Length: 206
Image 1 (cartoon, rainbow, N blue to C red):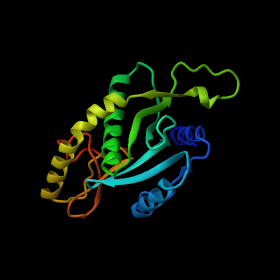
Image 2: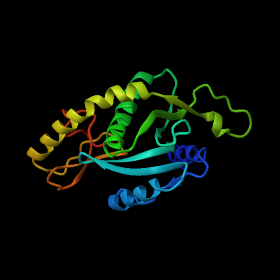
Image 3: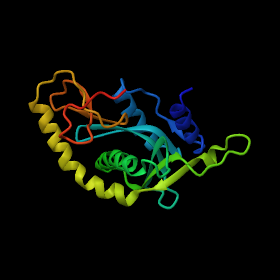
């Protein structure tokens, strides 16, 4: 199994009782409907929850009900990369931008978010015998940085959508991350949001 997939699955197991929204990316309305229904329940966490706001569809890796504030949620983005110093600044910039868009959509959709964190590989973990996922996974709170970045997202999305609506749809894709997609105003296709509106189009990710 690909480590990224395995890592994601193991992280969700750290949230017993959590419920996964299983509708895939080809069935966004089913995912949105399932999410809306589960939000009314008492599940302590939702995996791959779907939300739509300002033409942007997101799938949140993990949404955990806040224990400190039961009416709010904690956003957790799962990454199988190491949190070590090598390349950390560049990785954090990308991940924080990704979470900022998710935060923008969540709160725009009426979901109160208390915190935004990254769950990724603990570079200081030393394996002794069987793999201990509770030690391999480290959670880092980046709420302040994510909120600061989210404050810029609305204007960038408006610019991106304006560019998309005026440009010819040639089948190219603008990429941001697998968890964030933008619907062009003419609904011709669903595109993945680029890291910057200037990146139009960007090279396809492998």
